[in-house]
Image 1: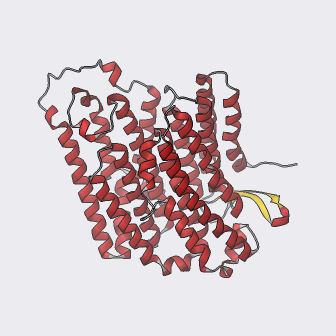
Image 2: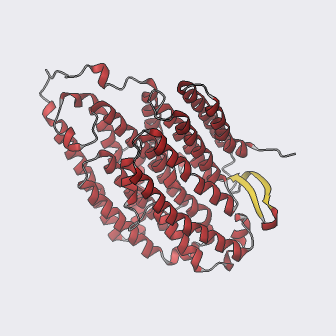
Length: 473
């Protein structure tokens, strides 16, 4: 008799929720079912966090069954001290996305919610996998829910976004698949724990294939232009899941395979990889100055931040700093995209040019925009502040030139963002008699669920910032 442990239950819960969503009679019941299922998954993930023994540097809660015994491929899942925080983040972000759309009209509600639940299940499964091909199945299965979300969110979905996502995703998939098959053939096993013991049998080909595969997912120059286009043309929920969760699959491959198996090769080519990261940061910063769409600005910020995380990894100052910076990126990006959706809902535009027309309605979203500025520049007591400090230190460990460039980028972006904010709102300072053209009730974010999303993410960002020393222990 098969007995599932808590990790397998955690993976299967969202799939079970998908079944109940399709059995629901109407869209309201669908949303409630999906939300409750996600809440249970969230509670279970944080329960595992409290039960996990962080003093032991071992894999815990292992669940192992023969999947394809003739080929030595198993269903093997478990938790380690680096994957567990990501699993908690995934369950929380997925819960908040369902909370965000609770009162929102969706074109095909059942398919949209089912896609989010499947994405949650596959993402958690990927971070729990300790079999090479099980990891590959979970990783590549997340592509399908994202495409379904784009299709089902609205009638006039963007075919261009789907095509770019598929094309670059296919490039990454081909590279990672060939690398995994090569590792399997060389080591004679798909068990990652056994592969760690036979890493001396591996050549340089799987290493470079994995580097190219994660370069698309991070993304790194010259393979990063697809991400801003996909973000701009995708629904907010899809952008949040793609930016906050899907981009972290690159870090999973780094932590689970590249670091323990190809550590010597990483150290050998640290200079070349870090140069590409710095180029990506400089180009992303330059593109931010030329953008008019808020969502595209935040998309380029995401690329900039992910490459900062990569520098932390390459510097060798510690994997816990790398994980911390990635978690911060997930919550900050979710906050930015949700805020952009709120602004678009209020004013029906994301254009900075339109915002600079200084209509009276801007008073109502002033606090949202100001909070975005503070999050982007990483003010003290936020997780972004700690990440900026760690990133500068890490880049200095690699090269003083990198640290100088990064400091310049941070200062330049902070100045630009404050200048943009000031240019939008400076004319409202002395207008105490401004009359709103539209009733306040139609402009304010009255939804309690959306307010809860903002409060929750803000709390996470502040918690990581204030208690960073405890988190990084």
